[in-house]
Length: 489
Image 1 (cartoon, one colour):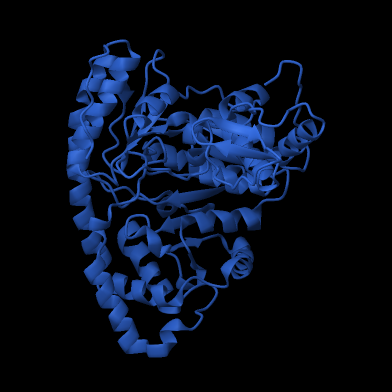
Image 2 (cartoon, rainbow, N blue to C red):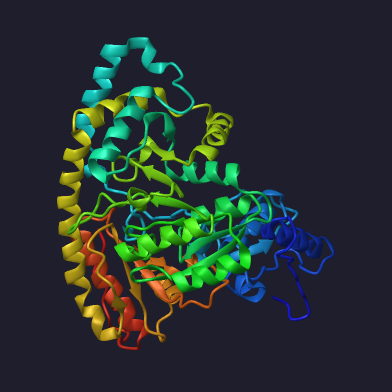
């Protein structure tokens, strides 16, 4: 940023930071301070200068682009818009960092994708789901396509109630379950229902950027609480509760995204006691509890004797992402508002898919599918652990999660996660730099990468990890000009 330009954002205003920033940049562009085709500061540099999240800068630049003030160049940055060209929106800047921060992944045809946690289509239970779809059509005929109740198809809610009791020891009546179109919609509904501008919301640090964006869009002030190997730092949480009196805490207790860490049983109990004592509600986002390769993991909700936990679970992530199906349950005081918010959002989730998934649960296809994919993912998990064993010589550290679909690797100080991301991307291997997941109010170390193995096959794991190691060696100064990267076909 030009040295003589000062931008100040007021975190006490009931106006989102990204809108404040966009307004100030618009004024600078209109006043000619930034000229046509001049490059705006990078997302990372501006976020650091203003002491805000990367997401704040991303959303401000998106808003400016939508309003015609700027345009983006892939791999280059964001520029003040030319007036003599009609430049279409493409949202590619800072070498795809902007897209990743927004939860969007850009891939070339030959990329090896260690960035996505979605399963490969080969694991989708197509035949079983085809069977239940046909059964629903034969049984219900045209009724399969009528609107279900706003809170969801009744028999499915009953199936989910039984599923929760049998698998997670959670006792929730069917009438207290709201069907949603995936986990992200659940987060959006809670943000719409619970947050008023200026409310403080606590999140784990680092965390899922899609949740942060949803909360910020409602005017929330985000406070990050550091994650440790056994869960959130409770001493920091206590300190910030006294300072800010938050509306709620957003958490992923099992195989947290992105760290893959899981809370200890002791920390789960202490967290629930702390929440009850301080009238703090907890949003539990559960999308990975099923994928444990050793001991079974139970959700925080299973221990919730105080009814402080708002529980969201997505089925589509592990089943078939395109289904967009999940559910949430909340304390009684919030439930009616959630139903209203769901109705204004999309009336209801697909009744046909709900009826089919009801049969999928009742006929035990879900349980069979989970056992099948756990076997496949466990094999990939063991293989990727074996392949990254050489990383130890570069002082790269990580904790084995024994579940989930990712590894969270801490890099030494002489290797930047951004530089490694760029080097790997130049060689058609996509990883996720850890920096995009961090909230800026804590001075946490952010030099991590996330490697996910949900969307790669075993051959790609071997090839891709070899490329990553070569990139690490190059950044460490260990590669000469004759280093060869294996071809990707």
